[in-house]
Image 1 (cartoon, rainbow, N blue to C red):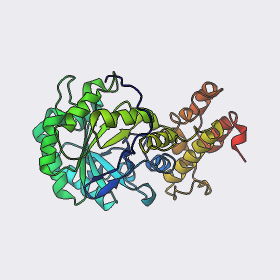
Image 2: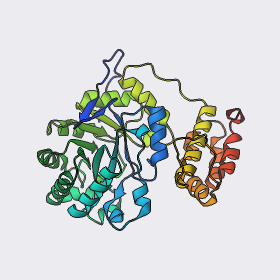
Image 3: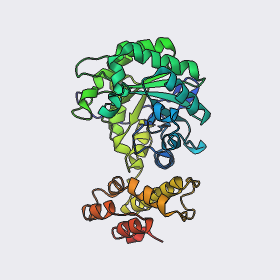
Image 4: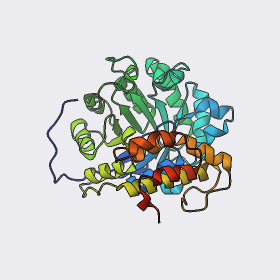
Length: 356
């Protein structure tokens, strides 16, 4: 990706787009991220970040087939986070069709097929990015899902599997011919993982290959990045992933920039601490099976759910306060927390004024 001069204001707002009949406006999408984009976090990103669309964590079609409750819970969607896509992965067309039907029954506005995950345990099953090496099977999976549901179907891909072999255009044209409504491309090859720099020229080249909506993904951290991706590639939407982890305010700044609105003030340490604690409360309520859209409600008296929630967020909580004085010192303490009271005590040592 070649650096370009800063795009000076004013810039016309980047318009929204449609995936079939589903409007995505603003055209900024929250990426599906394993162990991150669970229902409470998606809701925070919608409420604070104002994104146009959210994606669930990827859900294993095989796990759903065998009745895995944990996988099915990932598909929970609240009206407040819509439009929302449920992302599924697998390599067997029949099993994927069943998973897609379940996703629609649970309220998916869009069913998204993961053909971009590079993690070995996924690729070894022939799923995720491994399908990029088997175009015939990839198309069979997409076809089965399309025939199974009456909502728009999208596919997320990497540029290809082996670095340098750009497989996405051929597959994308085949998907478009089958009726896929949108393609998302992460502009790296599967063998790269997250190494190196995303090559946005691959997004531009894929834009030339298909006429359906195209979403670009890779190395968008700030609003200026998103604006450049739109202008350099011609994509319809921009998907943001790692920059949003424990930082929904990054999404708000990106949305403001592409909408040509004033950039919001960065959150104070106190605001970050309050939001981190809100996230923990929402996660506890979610784990306990209680309504999680009311973070100020009482924490359920469920020690097991509280422990699961806090342990799940141990790696994310330090990111809420990263860069502030004292943040490094509390990282280890947060990694040892198992209760909400413990988290509150650790974060409170950084920002006592965050508490009424």
